[in-house]
Amino acid sequence: MTGSRAAIAGGCLCGALRYAASAAPAMAGYCFCADCRKASGSGFMPFMNFDAAALRFSGAARQHVGRAARGTDSVRNFCPTCGGLVFGGIIGIDTDHTIYAGSLDDPAAFTPRIGIFARDRPAWVPLPPDITVFDTMPDRRTE
Image 1 (cartoon, helix red, strand yellow):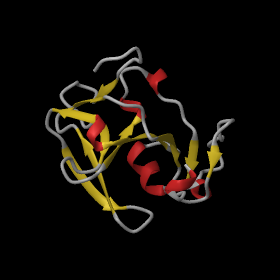
Image 2: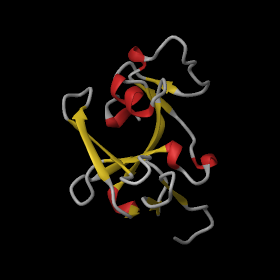
Image 3: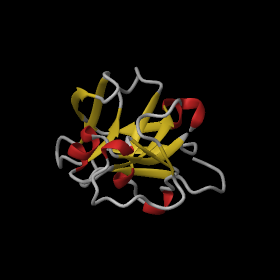
Image 4: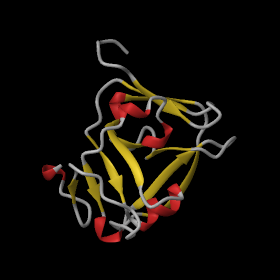
C-alpha cells in the first residue's frame, strides 16, 4: 500500500490469519446486538466495514455461520490455530467485509462514528461521546 496515510492492517493472535486494507473504512463503530456481544465476549463488537476490493487476506480461516439480527447469515472468520476472531463475510462472494477492530495491529486506526443496535446495549456499557446512535441497523444512506 502506498500513500501518506498509514496502512490499516491486522490479524489474529498468533499472526497466521492476516489482512491489509488499501482504503479507509466506509464505516466504523460499535455493534451492541446479542450476536456481536456473544462473539466478542464483551458488551459490544468494535467494527470497521470495508469494500471487499480494498482488502487483502492471507492465511487460513475457519468460519462460523449464525443468524444476524436482520435475519440473514452472519459469517465470522477466525484463525483455526489460535481462535482469534478477525473478520466477517465470505471472501470472493461478499462485496464488503467487517474487520473486527480488536484485530488491528495499530488500535489508533479505529475511529468509531456510530453505534448500532443500541436497543440491545447492556446498561453496564457506556456510550462513547460523539457517535451517532441507532436503535437497529441504519439505512446505508444515513451512515
